[in-house]
Image (cartoon, rainbow, N blue to C red; front, side):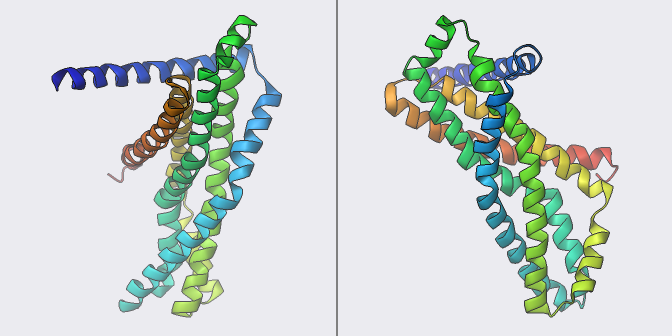
Length: 258
């Protein structure tokens, strides 16, 4: 048992080291071997391809929150604060987290499976033989595309969720348009927006690093690729939830609220 724990610990440390290596290599490649066409292609695949699912997730998340908040606030006669409650909750927490989890399920698994197939199929070794840097060709475009597109997707999810919150408030609580959006404006403060901007950047790095690392470290044929794909989504999701608390606490501490 101790041997198994020791082996798993060494493997985890190696994965972390390899992920850091890929991250630093990607940053270096941006300045030394930037591949604009590959980056744009990955932005289209990873980002634009996620617009629909992210918008749908944001809409129903906002409607669900609007429904529950309307019921609870009505008890205290405070329905006028619905817009602020939905806005703050979405921008600070649910918007970035739900978007990152949805993108992780779609993008992280895609990265791991695609790179895993290339790894077990010796295509990565072929790139090295041809003198092409695999990090610059395969990793950098994917990580940069996620870093660019996840904040954009998060803004989209936030906006749609706030609108969804209004629909729920209008149907259930008979809340007027002007009352709801006046409260939304109160929630759009700089303090609330800081966490909503920082979190997607951290989550994007996690998705890119975990997806590429799991794919390039996969072994054992197609079964190994499938296992690496599943593990990539699980690891990315867990790290997103953990980092959400850490980043949220640090942001609140910096703002003097914790």
